Image 1 (spheres, rainbow, N blue to C red):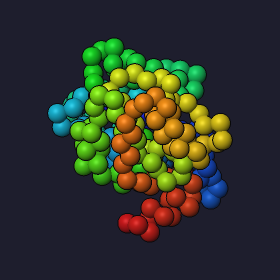
Image 2: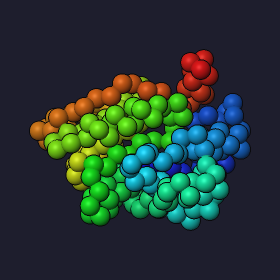
Image 3: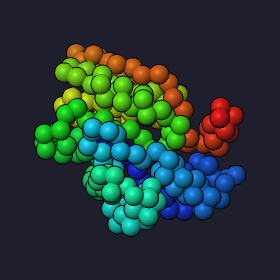
Length: 198
């Protein structure tokens, strides 16, 4: 189980919330997301892959108290863009003998842990587990082996990433396991929608 995270620094996270939030408020909000989201998954090796590596101390400070004692491991994301960093994460963990591997976002603070556990259970040979985020992307991807051809930007734009990935999965002859749509928070409207849902 991998959490993909960023160092919660003003002007570097949740910039689409600004305005009306200030860059400090947006960074603080993302820090709150990290403290809520990052949790060990019982019986599963749990890692946080952080970005950028030179801001590791800021990310460590934002993680929940006791994260190391709980067995959560922090590693650096490596790669030129998000897609390359995800590809490298999968490749590294599969090379170490971990399978399946599931990456989830840290932008969905209300994502139920039972859904994540169910996604892990559904990962298997020839299957790709995807959780659509409602904004055209996905909040979670689970693979049984490294499949770099599935990971990449959508030529039609960020709001078609889930659809394009689903096409790639089918073209590769793999089974797509589609989870329920869940909310992530990228814009102020997303934040308001989360508050209303609560």
